[in-house]
Amino acid sequence: MCGAVSSSRGKGMRTCFSFVLALLLTSVAGAARADVAFVADAACPATQAIKSGKNPGNVSTEAGQSYQLLAGNKDAPTHYLILVPGADPERRWVKISCGHVTGGSAAIAPAPADQTKPSAPASGKPEYVFALSWQPAFCETKSNKTECQAQAPAGFEATHFTLHGLWPQPNGNFYCQVAASDKANDNPAHWRDLPPVNLDPNTRSELDQVMPGTKSDLDRHEWIKHGTCYGKSQQEYFVDALNLMRAVNASPVRELFTKNIGKQVTSDQIRRAFDSAFGAGSGERVRVSCLVDPSSGRRLIGELTLGLTGPIGATSSLGDLMQASAPTTKAGCPKGTVDPIGLQ
Image 1 (cartoon, rainbow, N blue to C red):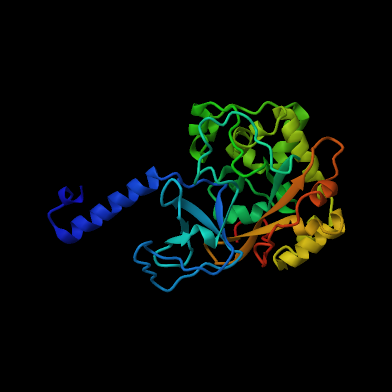
Image 2: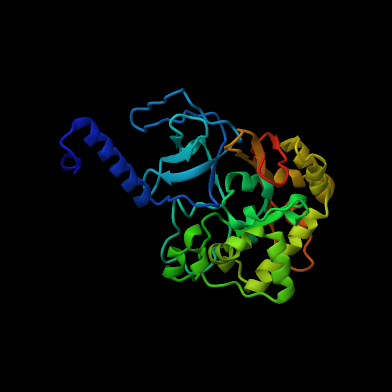
């Protein structure tokens, strides 16, 4: 195939390599998705090539660090292609055993086409991951997003956690009774083409504040991928998530972050704050994910994910939901900076 590209060996091989790489990145089940990241659980070689193990600069992942996830090497991947800021080249391959995927793994291993209804966790009780964002950190890496260009010092997201999503478990429980065309449109470039989320005016107003990503149609994506497996209406799904958000933002966890804007906090501090707010042991159900500011190399706390177990409703206690969850969550990123609003 590449022999016909050019008769000049050097130029032809470079052209061929670019062509093959483009085919790889568009054909694997792993085109980049804004809500998917690879979090390293250990220091592992980050190589330029899988077979040869070539590793210019002897680059390794950093335990607890979050990396942009670009692709898998095949439908059932053994390696992930990640972006390592500062490496040369930045695109590197790591073994999937080196870490875990956050924000769902549909971009790497799509759910079976015949999945039409929610699947129950092995425990028999409903289980969820509740994902909170620290929006200023997110915007350091996604400054072109509409919601990031609209940041303001007096904005809600300057001093509050924002809603990423409420995700029914087990992982892979996605797209329940969703049309193939909507699955195909579930990427950031086409979220506008997904069906709108219909909420009452009060809920819509609160969601637009607490989930700034609605400006980029994040709510449509969250409903199509996760909410359709929640077993309730759009209105109930987002009301339940907003109730949980209020509990976090009224707690010592938010106070820890607002008192340390521009400073570093550790995962231990965050977990202790959850223990204080929601009962002893709650912190063991919290994972911290970090981002790397591409302009400065700072490690920023980008997201907290909470394990929850039990039915969620208007009177549910976040502390009870957390403590009912299995205390097996790794702490994740050991420490990072609480980013102030605006691009630094």
